Length: 188
Image 1 (tube, rainbow, N blue to C red):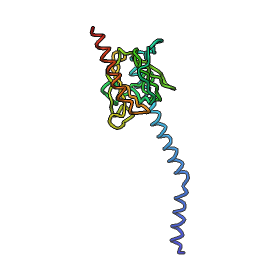
Image 2 (cartoon, one colour; image 1 turned 30 degrees about the vertical axis):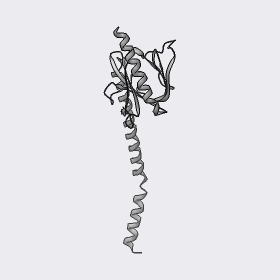
Image 3 (tube, one colour; image 1 turned 180 degrees about the vertical axis):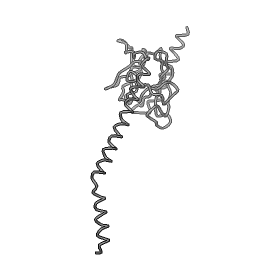
């Protein structure tokens, strides 16, 4: 081999094994990822601070009455009503989790293993509908059960997805019938 080819081969070999530069880039990338994660965490905490005016979540009554419907599935979070990207994080409402929903005459009981449970009294329910998305989750049209309810002076949308999506229509009908009945009784 000619000396020029040997020098080029040695130079390529030196470039491939420049470990100091590779380690430097790797450390820089790890620091950048850590910074982005920290900023996201601080943003989540800041959003919770901004929403600290929300009152505490109601607890289920001792005697809620007979069970009308129950459902297992996923809770995908709550948002300001009508603003599907404005996630509510105060009181753990932004935490996605498994869910056991129970509808009784008293209201909607939301049991979330590993997260804060809450109860929506029947008088606070405003609407139930099928939708395609809520902050952090987008599905096919009608793939998400969205319940609108009043908490304090705010209207919230909470998104649920049943393990058996065919149940959603039954839930929408039962919730809206309950809301209409409650409004009719309240008008008297």
